[in-house]
Length: 455
Image 1 (cartoon, rainbow, N blue to C red):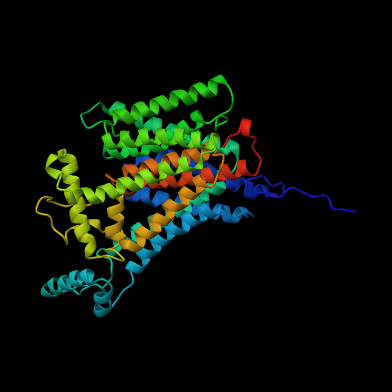
Image 2 (tube, rainbow, N blue to C red; image 1 turned 180 degrees about the vertical axis):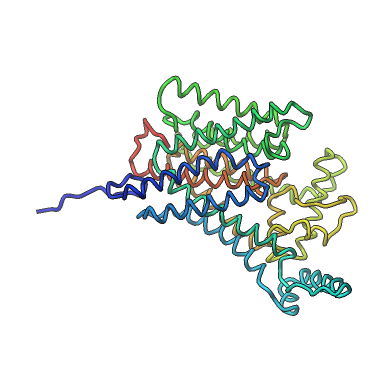
């Protein structure tokens, strides 16, 4: 007599065998995640010490809850690969902190060795003992940055396990849209200025980058038939209204690059949806390559000799990019230390750019200088994992559309800004990608019908 086949139990299903105490603990973790989404941008975009600590505590708490809950299914390979690639960048930071002898550091990073030797001579004149030689030019900053980068990876995995049901995805989505709405309202309350509204962020460009994520969440639900909203006129009207308000907020930031990236995000939603419904997978490649082309352009522009005909803001960025490339030559493979761009930039002084320069206004160059070619390779691997998430699925769910329309525009915007150096932005993005893959697995496992999808 044949045994009756039983459907597999997936990690995203509620298991009747789950301990009630563990279930309550998991609900606490999900509530903590929602509170985190709401408040993390309130600390000037997460740049304060308390905000960084909050990100790290929530990330590792979420991961701990996932372990305690005892999930029996691993995340998708693409998400696991992304998390490991980001953790590898943090590992590069740990390598940069290893004490080395002067001769060893001279072979590994001659520029770092030269800077430490000069510092040792200056300290000897005042009778202060020199610190140990390391690749990093500022070890405390590198340690903090490496821990924060690791928290992003853990946050993506924790969100994947905590946002595991359609009702939780809806709550997550609405909380993120609410957070974006709050930022716009706070910016409006502050008054309309020439530089644009900025909410609780230090500059309007970073608010624009943050709103790109929230607009992607609202736009994915609006554009997808059976997207992450309940059927009905009220829900559809709320989704449409929130989408319009978020794009109005983006326009009010007056960030040219931010608005261009947001328009690209909207185009990404339509193009990916069209490619999925018409079964034209090659069209999915276009949103993936545009950000890469923009990065390539920023690397070529400083050598084009067109800076005289460029707007002043872009011309100054081009000078920073050129100086950043010169600085990278001194730290080619392992960088100057995560979080040490200002120190590395001083090693290649520019006759045009004066004063302290803490950021390259280009996320790619920022990582290239501080993390070296090794970290850039890992970052490229993380980006490739997101591309695989999108390209390997024939029918993209609304959640995966939201992830794609968040990542690709942010990378595009990052070709002229330093959005990934503002902790609230990559932390929120990590939550979106982790939660989106959870809902996409839900849909792929057949637990959500196409006509009534919440993912």
